[in-house]
Length: 327
Image (tube, rainbow, N blue to C red; front, side, top):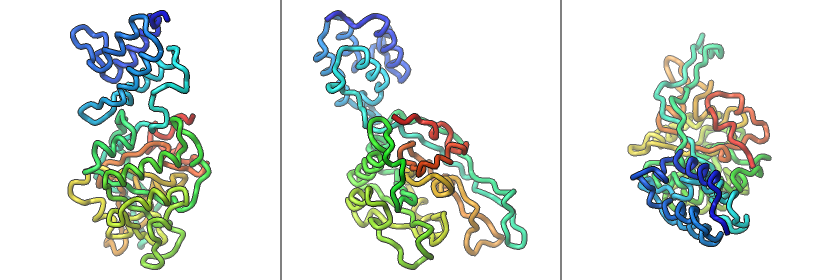
């Protein structure tokens, strides 16, 4: 077959260079992409190019990111413009959408109280100080940083309609299960927040598998019992009503928490950025803190189920995360 057209090759190189490849740069040729680039400059078969693409999946950089994922946009463009049948393509479809990291902000939520009653007009939640794409999926983030990372699953006791929506070739439920499986494989610690509609603190606290919907129970059951527990916030939305939870997220060496959960109203947003719930026995009265006051928060859009409500998209706390395109 004729060599890859020049105008397509130029676009392929541009896409690769945007994520740090030295491909085609004089004196700084990328060792991994150089072999693939050489194939595209001569009369090569689809099988040869496909095998070169597959080889990228076996190579990782210093941050443990596979080169196939790192150059995923360039590879997807190549496979769409080279004569490789869709069924034989090697791009990481279904590997998971990019992890987004929200940096820790120690400024806690605040509000004024009058005679012990909260003035809602004075409520100030915590904002993220930055939003950073990680150039890796959440599961790859786990593989690279499991020792310093924990996972929180927020109020998914029942299935939500949009868990069947597809992102990067996999449903939200499949993305959630992949993350939980990666947590189990990497010996991560996991916390599930008790549904605030199920009772009061200390009474009938569910087991981890009973605290999630049926579609997540197998993956949750695969996490060793010593590594998973249910934070008991009682009938409140924030898990910080359970003193053990703040101790858990403040564990020395833990720098980030991956968040999955139901974000249509106050559950996820309230736990991550703060909520209008008063801390118990605080004098003077104050709000419970936010997760982001203690650690960075890592997530991706498919890990946050909105129950088809989508109300999180009207909130600026999450930035571009809310607008990630579905399949």
